[in-house]
Every structure is written in structure tokens, then in C-alpha cells.
Amino acid sequence: MGIDVDQRFEGDSGWYAALAALDWQVELGLTDVISEVPVDRFALPEALPRSELQSHTRPEAIVSRDVVAPQIVHRETRADPGAALALAVEAAKAAARAAGSLEALRAAMAGYLHCDLRRGARNLVFADGRAGARVLILGEAPVREEDVEGRPFVGEAGQLLDRMFASIGLARDAPDLRAALYITSVLPWRPPGDRTAGADEVAMMRPFVLQHIALAAPEVIVVMGNTAFFALTGEQGNLTAQRHGTEALGLPVLQMTHPTQLLRNPAAKREAWADLLALRARLEGGA
Image 1 (cartoon, rainbow, N blue to C red):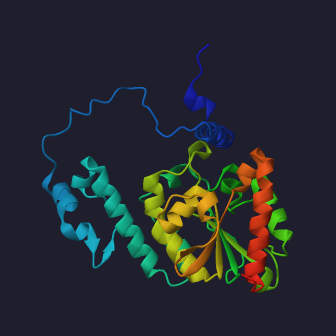
Image 2 (cartoon, rainbow, N blue to C red; image 1 turned 90 degrees about the vertical axis):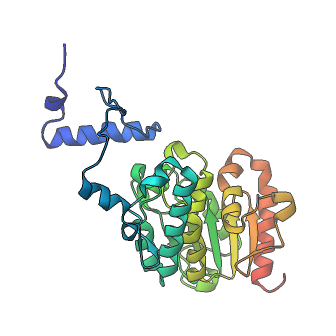
């Protein structure tokens, strides 16, 4: 028996059913919608109407003063991914540079339209903890739990992270800034299927990461995982060689194994504990 799709999703309850079905497909990694009717991309008009053509080719439609308009991509860049990425990075730099506070930075990231990850994410995951804390933790990207709640590190890995830092007297909700944590991620939107962040996505968000750290003004940066280390320093992470002694933005950087990896490989907790002790020693003035 055939089912009329319009009737099945008719009314408020049908709307929620359609939303649930879409959400399920996004969870499976759906990125594109395919029409039931084929579209002949070659059957396009040979010329655009003059008014539309002008709106796409005016230089001022692309650049207003020194800020690149994020919602407009020049026609020539569509066939050149490198040029499109360069334009996206410049837009990110301009938006981050103009943000003079954490609130302004959050608004700038929310208005940044170049990164396609925002289309499949429920929330922009900006930060958690207390700005001004001595320690800033930088992760890679939100996963499902963080995307739903809108905060970084709230799933099983986040619970482990809280226990790890509590063991040396630090917490994201500590009333004393000297014992507080500030937590953020390289990507503010969840990648489909919790995949690893792409190089182009990291490049686009890096200006926001650097400005975020500058505004939060920590004393020490703790990076969780190789992607976060690369976004911060531009170098490939190596836990053996670069666990200690690295600097970025004039601040000491401590690279630690991501809590997700610790859940998969409990034996690595020994090194993580040594890292935590080194961090405590640095904060106490012993390193």
C-alpha cells in the first residue's frame, strides 16, 4: 500500500516526525539531499540577466572596506577550492580580529557562514568553564553529547576529563579563578559521524581559536589530541617529543592524550597522570 508523504507528515505531529527522520539521517552522516527527479546541470541559461550578473561580479559585493562578506562567494572561486578556502580564511581573520570580547567572538563565529559543518550541527559549542582561568583546555570538536547540550566535554570523555583535573584541584566550575578551568574546541560545530576535523575546517577556524585564547588570557594551554595541537602551533603533534617545552602565543603548551583515547587505552593513563603532575608543578611555580 502506498503512503502519501505529504499526508504522513501533515500537522504538528507530522512535522516532528519529519524532523526526527532528518535528525536520524544526519546522525548516519547524511550530507547531501538527492532529488527524486534528475537535474540536468548542463541545461542552464547561456547568460544571466544583467541585474543578476552585476550583483555577482561587483567587487564591492565581495569586499566591504577590509572585511570579507561571509555570505558571498565570488563566482570565480567556485571552480577553485584553493581560492575559496583562502577567501574563507581571510573572512575568519577579519571577523576574529574585529571581536574585542568573548561575547563578540561568539557572535562572530555564529555569523560565519563559510564552514559547512554548521549546517548539520544543532548548536554552536563555544566554551565552558570560567574565562580568566589560569588553565585553558583546547579540544578538537564536539561529539554528539556536546552538540546536543551546547557545551564542550560533557559526554563520557568529558566526565573523565573532569575527574582527571579534579585530582590536581582544578574544575571548570571552581569559584576561585586560580582553581578554575576554561574549555573550548578548535571546531565549534560537530563533524558528521564524529569524524576527524578536515584540514580546511581547521584552517578556517584557526583565527577564531587564536583570538579566543587571547581573549581568555590563560597562563597555560593544555591541548587534547593532535588536531588541537596542529591548530594551535601549525605543527604535527608528537606526544613523546612535544609533551612539554612547546610554546604558542607566548604561552606554555602542554600536550595530553585525549580522554577518548584514554578510555580506549587505559594503560595511557600513566602518562596522563604524569602530565597532570607536571601541570600542577608549573602552576605552583615549580616548573
